[in-house]
Length: 321
Image 1 (tube, rainbow, N blue to C red):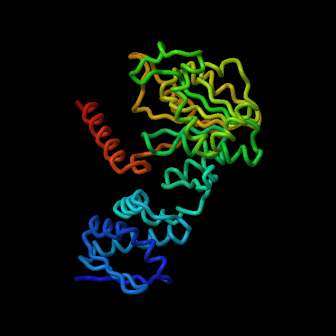
Image 2: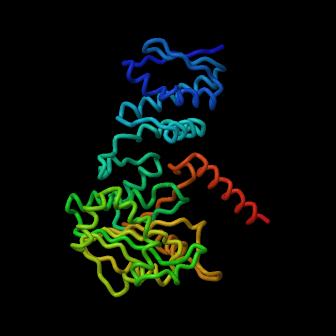
Image 3: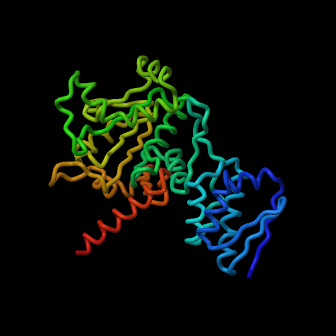
């Protein structure tokens, strides 16, 4: 039996590494088929040579995250394990320590995967960013966090969030209320993210002053949006004409982030998606970057990753037939 020793400077590090009821270490033992024991500040990994070497890389990756002030949970432990298994553990050095903004409850918002980190850097360095990928990768939430951060730093005067009002199978036309009340269900995820960052009272205050606007895409026509951070969510449900109309609203001192999942298009049959088109059309335009997320960037429940992967395999098999 092969074994490796890892020395940890403090007992607190070992406690954080193991997690409650040793859940983090049990996960490593299961995934790499090794045995991990701790004596004081010394960690011993036992098993077959290759398994032990991989488990050691995973533990070192987790220790790096802890050194950057990150709290370990099932999501980032599984992420580190997946990176080690595909031989990308060196890139984990770039992870951790990058706080975008603080929520109303005092929680720091940070990128949790390399895909998310790349997305944040793209938003910082480009005027227009297209974030494309499956549900649960944090496309919208991180874009709203970047918008709030820019607003607090007085880099922009307004935050504008918009979505196309396209039904995902349900019909909302017969709901009671005025036009705004009818479209509010479409905009709810955007409200939720803003409430989380700002708190309901502060959000209300900024909205009344006109600093924050949450509106359906149709409301953007004919406007020029200066000194604004503009987010178009669910962009896969725009038509090519709507997408062109939206992008040409860009004014001076503004940023645009477009997010969407091209596997969840709810447009009527035969209608082309503006997001699919714009990725090809603007591919080589300077100051515009497209970031593609994969199922590895999913930061929701582990099953969401499995569901996304299963659907991808199903769609691929269908295409081959």
